[in-house]
Image 1 (cartoon, rainbow over the protein chains, first blue to last red):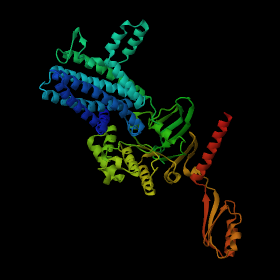
Image 2 (cartoon, rainbow over the protein chains, first blue to last red):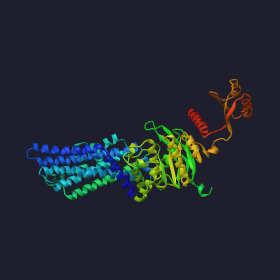
Image 3 (cartoon, chains in turn red, blue):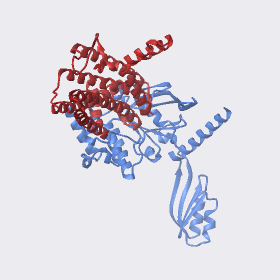
Image 4 (tube, rainbow over the protein chains, first blue to last red):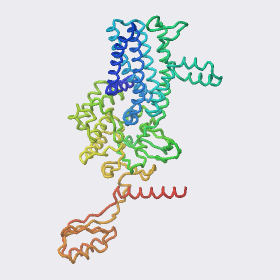
Length: 262
Length: 324
């Protein structure tokens, strides 16, 4: 079982590594880091803050967008191009195929997040800021955010077109990021608005957990520029991510199991 | 034939597949209760026009499509079955592969999915690449392969697991005459190795040349099944005669009652019906000073049977739709 999943994952990695858009995104992230340097110079003694904020935002934003892009296309193109016919007619379960695709994507995304983080570390070092443990924790959280977003995209891709999957995945990511803000906004709403919003928010992963900087955690405001979350928090957030990843992949596998490849 | 050679390898019973169109929910019956059995060591030809249900049947057997009704087994395993797929090699119709891979990488991927160890994968891949004549294209990516080369690559990946059963969907489609002959030879070689082959085609001469048994499908239903000899009538349907004429006057005598006449220079080709008196015709030809070049009885071919059955299926379907 693991050998088959690994075979699909390796092939997916090979496929994704050939997508030129990814190299464009790497260039964009490098550009964002350069922009952070320029903006830092323009600010008044806020170089460090600007550098960290833009660097981390770049990892989260570009990592998540890449996850959505890969998630909605890699599975769909297998069906569209019929390459899947020669694969699922082999002794492989369909769920192994879906998990293998996700794993291959996760490897690509991990390498990308690593490259983004490396570029940010270079930029921070150049700024004379250095890499604090808060930044390391923030990068780890961003990595889990990206992996969660990838599972959202692959979930929608298991039954929908890339266009719709992309829209759904973007919407879910956006909602997940502003869950606390929505909760705060509906406090004064009518009961049915509250109920509807609460139910809706229950089916969206709490992606805001992966970017806690500037939010109140356990009664205190945390920031990547000062007192940040503990490693215990990072562990719990990663468990939250794993729960969603496993759950979404399980549903994607069930849906994929029922599909006809005509 | 021994008892072992007659056991059933593929058993399809009342297989049905109905699709529904997305919005109007209109029913489209792709398979309407197809039943057939493929015996061990046989080459089984699956014939039908486009849209007959050949590919749907094969994809259902390979677990790509879920049947709406009926059942099927491969090597005793009810489909869809991973255990069955482990012993089956499959070439999809107009195969699409990852075009960034080389043939070696494609076969390695197939071998990994079949659970083969690295040394076996390497050994089999090397042998199959040579067997399908792609040795010179080893370093090329599949993107640069011609259609014929892709078909060969597809055949190679279908044989990576040294399968007991080989299922080939239109293996000769898009190939030139040499490529078709090579595929036919490969299928015959597989039978000699004791493998069972199910292959679909709408190239009837390919089927007639190599299949032990043939099933004709049209509009999702089985029309006929049997050996080519059982299916086509051995009675003489007509005669094709060719003579070299000495005088123009002889032409009227020789073409009377002919269903087809063709003349090229002094050669006259005449087709007569099965009930024609050939001896009397030959006497007339000799009397007119014509030299007889060829006399060939014409038997029914698989193509004749195919065309008749397809026409029958079409008219039956039209009648049914008319009643509805």
